[in-house]
Image (cartoon, rainbow, N blue to C red; front, side, top):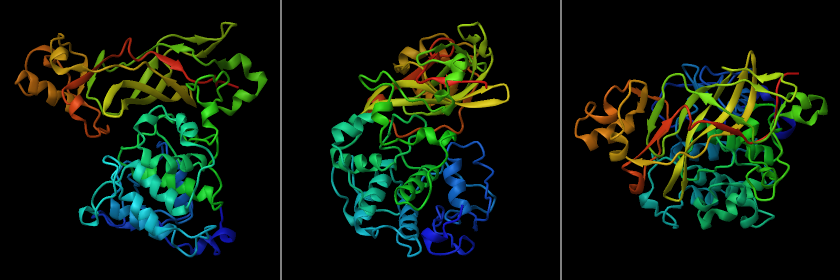
Length: 434
């Protein structure tokens, strides 16, 4: 992929423009090379964004050949990205990048709906996904063609989007900048932005400016890009009777016998435990196994029993109100073939820690460290004691993400019965096999 005509120079002379770890006290960065790959992005959802930019010398990894995609971005690091990408004379934007506007929105206090005083800014503060996108959108001078009331209904958590950001996020959505992982329908505005997410936003911004080509629609990453027409494609949108799926095979009528239809129910099991206990706000990766064969009308097995489904338990909020946690499937593995897979469980509501602790403990319960701390404070026994804490196997989910929990959920826990609560319903058609 060469951009000498867009950047005005040969790709062999491109300097490293985006150093996402530039200001961090971490090992020295490695200059990007052709066919770059990082040891910790091989199975990461953002791999195409990361590797495509790295192959052009626009981002770098660390000396240990990692990219650290889940590391959060600070204000200083993000300002370095803006200055080195969008204000670089080699990147020929249709119009200049407005650094003043970008800095204003990256510093905006959306929680209190006001600009932040300069003496309150700290370079080490993390930036939210909303701040990052608003900075890029306003820096590029992107505008919307439709009303926020129309466009932002693409997001199930639209009520959490501040009014001050409605216009900018509408423009970002229409221009294809928004990338939502793990569920494309949830924007999660207050979540601290990660290196992977910032890379995806930057890549999509350059796509919107005609500097990069879109990533392949066949990649897993493509399913997390909010398309300008996603309102009509959202299977949960009112009146939508013809949802568009993420699998390009679905357009082939010869595959009708291999199609698993929208709203198919799939029973699953989690072999490591009968119950999982987490706190509101925790997002945790899981791999489930299909309990029963999924067959077509001719009795042919399309998804064999014990096929693997990878995804994430994700918390849902309406403002500060915790709605519940649900499993969001991302990948289905049938034999040696992997498929993008769009299916979700029901919402699992929270319970008070006192109620949870009264349930009898069993040996195959897995509990997160945060949930263990809350239960210990209720029982006054720390890491041991009566009720659910008896017989617990130990803390799990070391790589999970737990945003700051509000006061309204501080004493709540989510207890998941893995045999019943994780039953999945497909959100789009899926074609398997040939």
